[in-house]
Amino acid sequence: QVQLVESGGGLVQAGGSLRLSCAASGSIFSINAMGWYRQAPGKQRELVATITSGSNTHYTDSVKGRFTISRDNAKNTVYLQMNSLKPEDTAVYYCAADIRTVVAIYHRYWGQGTQVTVSS
Image (cartoon, rainbow, N blue to C red; front, side, top):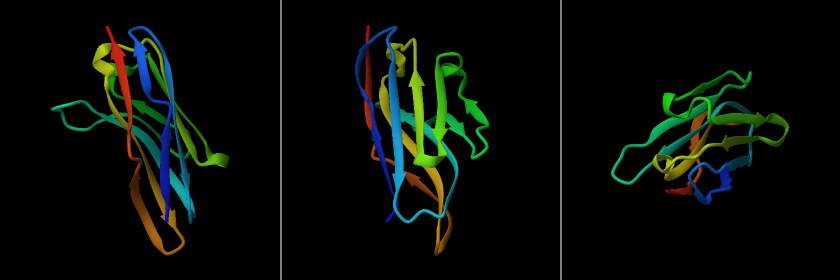
């Protein structure tokens, strides 16, 4: 019963900042990559940022220089610091984690999503 719980979404003005958190809990043996994705109305879900177990990071071009992904392995938590937010960043943000349990190989788990709305 692995679960990912997200927090930190909300309404912010353009140019503002938000920090998203996502904590994994349950019968976890190990966690490989973790990441953040987003889905705006009428659009497909897209990758925002990923971070490996060794803290190697990747970002989509539209957020480079503005967003920072990080993780705390001791807490099984991934963060997304979002600065200089733009209206086009408005979307539901989902965290994801590739988690191995005692009885299964790595499986992709998803959070329920948290709404981020950036006003003009």
